Image (tube, rainbow, N blue to C red; front, side, top):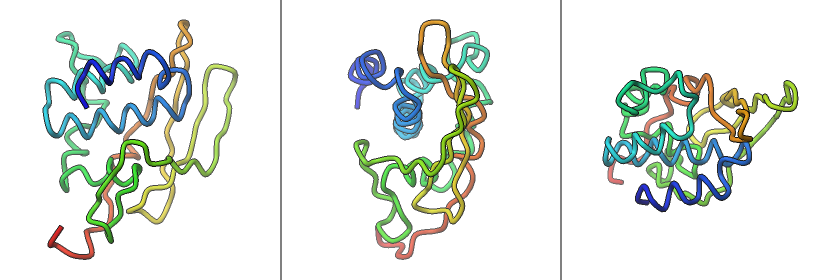
Length: 153
């Protein structure tokens, strides 16, 4: 996915829901691993301003260096990737939200299931004044996943 297509989806649908913002972040991470400049711009759209460096790139709070470990399998695991399928992912794959806690009308915490972890991962989101959902505390998403069942993928 290129940045223009990503930005169009972000502006028209993804930014308007917690699940959409999460999907956009995960897609941005996967694209970042292919092309750090373009993928970094994608990830930056999903984060609050204080997570962004002066040059517009995502800062250390995006945990991109952790996502890069193990070929990005942690990010891929929320979009259909499993150890059994070699972490093959699909950007349209349903995200498994197990629990959602609304912390007011502009803040929520969701727990999502990874295809490579036993326990769900929490993600904290806040809606800004423009009605756009942004991700906070994404570190749990970047934690390790099980290794692939077959190294031939």
